[in-house]
Image (cartoon, rainbow, N blue to C red; front, side, top):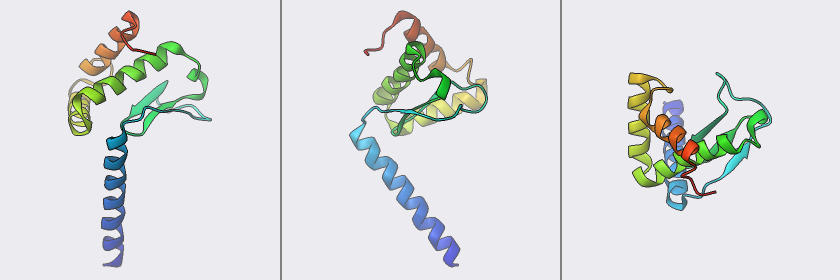
Length: 114
């Protein structure tokens, strides 16, 4: 019983923390001292920021791509962003995902402000 209560409170604190961070919407890049799994170069996790693999930390192309995901998040909001991303991800995968295609196109066209 205590364990369940602890888990409920922990989950509440984590969700509250994420919503508080969402309020500030400050874009941050975290350079990881290791590489991400599954050949990921970086991953944007709103509202926390972008987590960059060690070998891509100076790649302007990767930074622009991930920054565009942040722009998508700012336009859509936290819940809509995750809902759209995850539902489409499970239907079509990461490569064919419309948000990924849009970010790739924006990176090529350099539509993201630096």
